[in-house]
Length: 146
Image: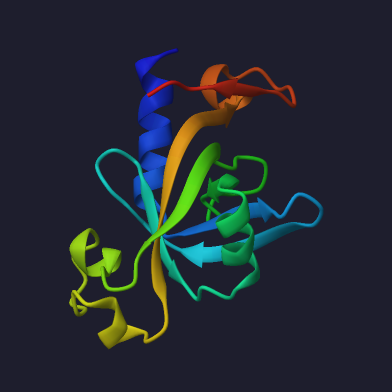
């Protein structure tokens, strides 16, 4: 895969602030938009309430799908990446937005949003639409190893 495709994935992941995470409990699917930050390895972090539907799903099935896209692109020129990943709640105190994002927020998550937990999403595979990779207009995805 081209270095250009890897650069596109990296730029989409690091330059956007919202993702859609898709989860399932094995019977019912669910999608949730969340604000996130990414670390240098493209792990994604967000905060959520432990009792939310997507967190309940993640507790029983950590396999998730994520979509990140730049919604500011003109029509028919969208830039987005689809990700297969594993998700886990990992901390009730770590605020990834302060630690990674450089925001002027407290390091302790509970000082910012009591009751929330930090969630880490570890990508397994990245995919781009073929037309972003090589200009071929087909409804096809290409895996981009990083």
